[in-house]
Image (cartoon, rainbow, N blue to C red; front, side):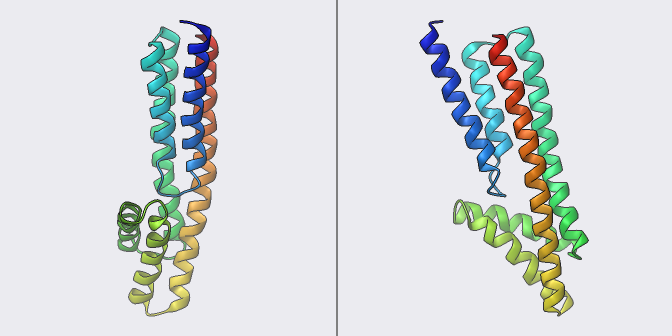
Length: 165
């Protein structure tokens, strides 16, 4: 493969990986999945060599772990703030629907609003609603940090793969 083509593939893949990494700022955006898809595209174009297969499996495990950690940290934060499981589930659904109806920021507004309103209605106390909302926000913050670190690790593994190819 000509060097200019290898360089172009690297640059395009890096752009997709960075899009996924910085997309993690938007809570509903599937940044780790975008990083994984970028690496998958790279693998399809350059081919799966033995080292690449091992690194791709590791990158896939990181992506799956990051998605689980994301949901656990946000839910745990909301629960710590006093939110019920129903409020957390409705917030998740509201976030997804909000993002689909008013992309890309509809989910950022819909999910916290759902937690606040449901907890306010359930407890009949504005302060309890705010407490649940703060818990959700704290969970989002921790989730972002964890996912960003995982995304950096995924990018680092891909760099190793690209360097070894």
